[in-house]
Image 1 (cartoon, rainbow, N blue to C red):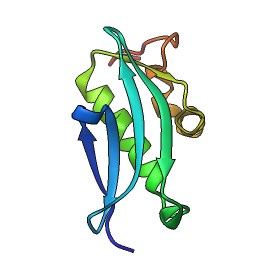
Image 2: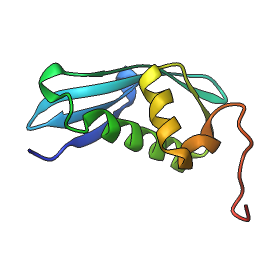
Image 3: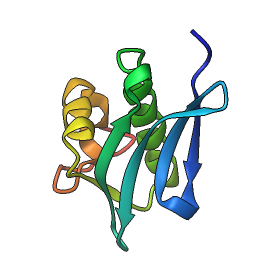
Image 4: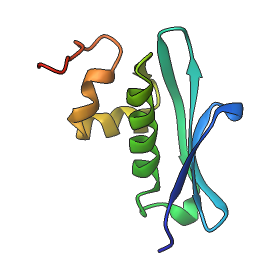
Length: 103
């Protein structure tokens, strides 16, 4: 399988995955002053089962964590479920206790 390239498309308010120049999937979001609200994730049927959704989720959440200005509200069932399986991102969820470097 070709490499999955992930990008943050700020003009369309979404994180995208591309394979060989074809958009394989995306995760849409809305921003507030304090939150990034993930509303929908979609993977093209021909790329399902190849880790595209997971690659998008990890890239998006790593980007949000690096920015450090917003908490995550995962209304999208895929992003919510992915965080449930990757607990190292649970502290980013809106309403979750924040962790510090000394925790």
